[in-house]
Length: 383
Image (cartoon, rainbow, N blue to C red; front, side):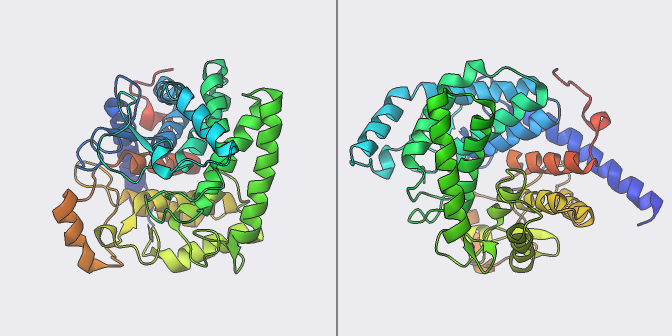
C-alpha cells in the first residue's frame, strides 16, 4: 500500500470511528440502555445484556466513561429488580426442582428494564457473564469504585452458579438443547473478573473460584475437538463467537496450542475474503459474513501476535459501512444459504443497519491496533 493509500485508509477509519462512538452515545437511552438497532423491526425497543456489555466495553475503551457507567447502572437496576425471582430460581434449583426455561431470566429487556411482551428465544446465560466481565474491565480501566454494583453482582453470581451447567440458547438464539462453549467462556470470564477484584464477599468469591475451575476443566475436556474449541459440548463444529473466548475475554490463551488451532479453524472454515460467518449451515438472512465477528477474530489474531491479519480484518469490517457510515449486522457478499435470504427480508425487513454491536467491535479492534486514536474521538468526550 502506498503512503497516500495508507493515509486515505486511516482517514476513512477515523471518520468511521467518530461516527461509531457518536452513534453509540447518541442512541443510548435516558435509562442508560444501548438499543441493539434503532430501526430493525425485531430489535426495536430492546437492549441485550450481551450486546450491550460489549458496546459498553467499547465506549469505556473509547473514553466515554459516563456512557459506560450509565449502562452498567442500568444492568444493576435490571438485576436488582429481579432479586426475588433470582432467589426463587436458586432455591428451586437447589431443591432439585429446576425451573423451566420460560421461568429463567431473559436475554433482552425493554429500555425501561421490563421483560418483553413478545415471544423470543430468551433463556441465554452468556449476557449475565459478559456484563460482569465488562463491568470489571471498566472499573479497572478508569480506576472506579464498584461498591454501587455489589448487590447486582452478587445476585448475578448466584444466578449463574445455580444455572451455568444447563443447556440454553447460544449467542444467536439457537440450539437451546446444547451447552455452548462461547456461553461458558462468557460466564467464566465474568467469574474470574469478579473474583479478582473481590466484588462479592469472601464466601461467594471462593465458590466463584471453584466453579471457574470446574468450567475451565469442562471446556478443556468436552469443549475441544481436534485441538480446537467447538460450538457446543460434544460437537466437532466451530462458531464465530469462539474468537471472543480468546480475545477480548481471554479465557483461552491466544498463543496456546488450542488458541492458535481455534484461530486457524475459524479462518479456514468460516472466513471468506476477509469476512467471518457465524457457523456452517447458517441460514439467517442467507448466512452472510458478520463485521462484529470479523473484529472478534481480529482481536484474537492480535492477541496471538499477528498484527497484519488483524489489520486486514479491521479494514474488511470498515469496508462494510454504507454511505451513511452505518455498519450492518451482516453482509451478503458471500452467503452460505442464498435461497434463504429473501425469506428473512420478507419476515423482518432488510438486515439490521446500523447494529451498535458492529460499531462497538470495530472500535475495540481499531483502538487495540492503534488505528483509532484520541483525535478521532475527541468531540464530546464525557470524562
